[in-house]
Length: 113
Image 1 (cartoon, rainbow, N blue to C red):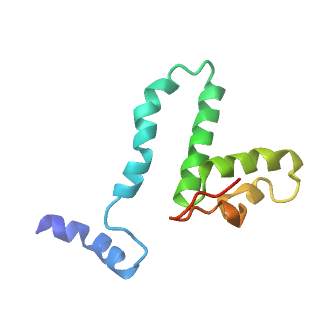
Image 2: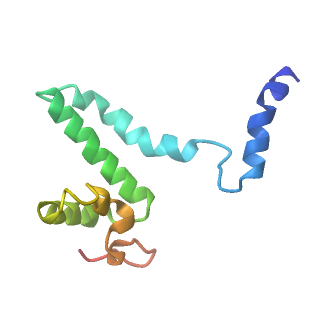
């Protein structure tokens, strides 16, 4: 009963907002491959190399989570970055929400980049 009393506000928050998930299993599954590969990052020659690896990994997982083909998304980011106006909006135009609609994954086919 003590545990229920302590967790009651969190349970109410979950019940009030239908977008919330009861568990974090989806997030745990998403980072599993990173955790398994983490030992390989120990051999990055410099800290900046390890940082770049984690940024790219984060971009791939974000693209997957938002329903984009991660290969097409990264290709689009690398092609768009040189022409990006860095004074207006920074990297905001490169967010997955701004990716071309044709990169959306559908159950029946993979998009063509």
